[in-house]
Amino acid sequence: MNANRSYVSAALTADENKKAIEVHLHEVLEQSLTPMEPGQAKVYMEHTAVRMAEEAGAGVTTFQMVEVKHASTAYMIRLAVLTNGSAIGLDLMDLENGQFFIPEVCPVIPLETPTVN
Image (cartoon, helix red, strand yellow):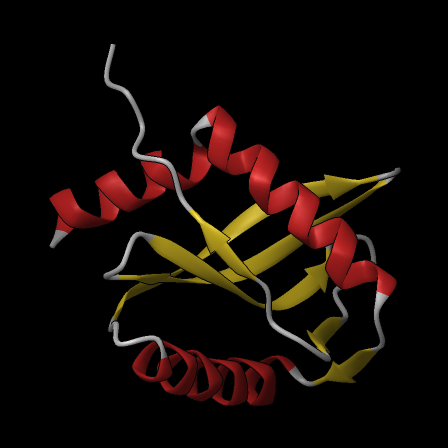
């Protein structure tokens, strides 16, 4: 399990995937966001991810938080990494004030396989 988590972490922080996550975060920030308590956001969005994965014929491999910057603000976005090589952007937290938000629409982000040097 630790090797899998390490691989997922490396995949999500690979330059091409980090850029894709940033682009999708910018799109999410353009839509309506609903503030929510951290525990509620986690449970609600993880159920949403499982449902979205099943609809896409995939499963959820893991959930992982990734730090992403937008303008002058940093966010932590929870991603559901799927068995079909994509990720779903879920809730996000503004690192400046600790507020969690859930998006109106969760973006599906195709992931590139990271290269190993």
